[in-house]
Image 1 (cartoon, rainbow, N blue to C red):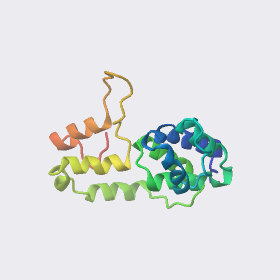
Image 2: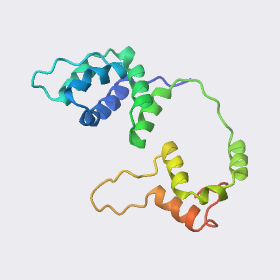
Image 3: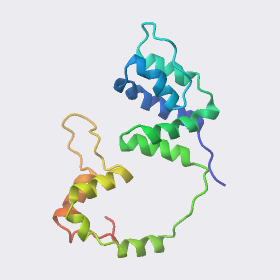
Image 4: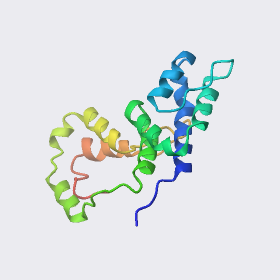
Amino acid sequence: MAEQMDLSQLRTLVECVLATLYQHYRHQDLPGLCERLRLPPPPPEDGTSRHKRLEASLRDCPDNRLAQVAQAILDSEPLPVAEQIGLQDVLWLGRPYVEIPGRTRRELAKDFDLSDHRNYPDRFLALLGRLWDLGDDMLSWGASTSRLREEIERHVIRFPDDWSTEASP
């Protein structure tokens, strides 16, 4: 049985996106932003902060429109990969999908040649960064954690014999 989308989780995720998104827009831009994101119009500017106006707009958004709002955010706003993946995960629950067997995934990986991608490491890592969370977001000041991006740079680009597309670490 397919899982159903969790509307409260989706609302929380959209709220988190809006909590930082308002910083990129002026008061006069908020009505256009809300329209583009399929949110209800924000309350008029009356000394209320941009953040509070977007919160009010989201509060007025009915649950049955949250999926449209989340999809509009994904379609029109650049997001950190972790936020993007979080929204996609909740949106895609319950949608039909094709399951790809492990054997097929391994055969595809075996046939994938990394040598051309190693010649353009910035492009390669940018592509991977659009598909997966490579751990680029800093957790805290001076945190010394091994990020996936650093592991890929080391084991795929600098020392290409360390990892193959077939054998994952």
